[in-house]
Amino acid sequence: MNDFQVEIRKCLEVLSAGGLILYPTDTIWGIGCDVTDEDAVNKVYTLKGMPQGRPMVCLVAHDAMLERHVEVVPDLAWEITDLATKPTTIVYDRPRGFAPGLIPGDHSIAIRVASDKFCRYLINAFKKPLVSTSARREGMPDPRHFGEIPEAILKGVDYVVNLHREKRRMTPSSIIALGIDGTVKVIRE
Image (cartoon, rainbow, N blue to C red; front, side, top):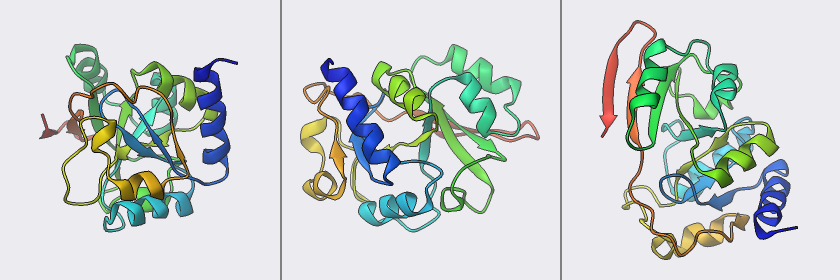
């Protein structure tokens, strides 16, 4: 078994037990958990010092998984992701199958189709989307590489993935909200 497979197996064990992982994504290091596990989602809010219900990004492995977890994927979403020059998260209306604590009052969810190989394999093996919120405490800057992740976050998760620690991550994803009514709002470029 290679390192990649070992890391996938360890993450699956932790996620299946309701734990939190710290993992490299296609943007920055993220805190992850099972999007359907309310207790795990609450642990993320507590670890980050974030108010319950604050929106968090979730990752899916592929387009079919996205379509299973969003009632309507607007055609514009496909165009945006095809034309995007950097990882782009889209806020969708009417999500399905997420823990209630992940869904803010406007009944939307921020989802990105992962482009990172490790993330795609992990999510496919887990068969569910993952929370992917930045590895930082509320009000602090996003860590640009593993060495900037706060000690409280490192100690607060159940497993830290041992891959890509030497790589510098660029920036968080762009975030665009798409309403079923056709509205488009750029939240973060």
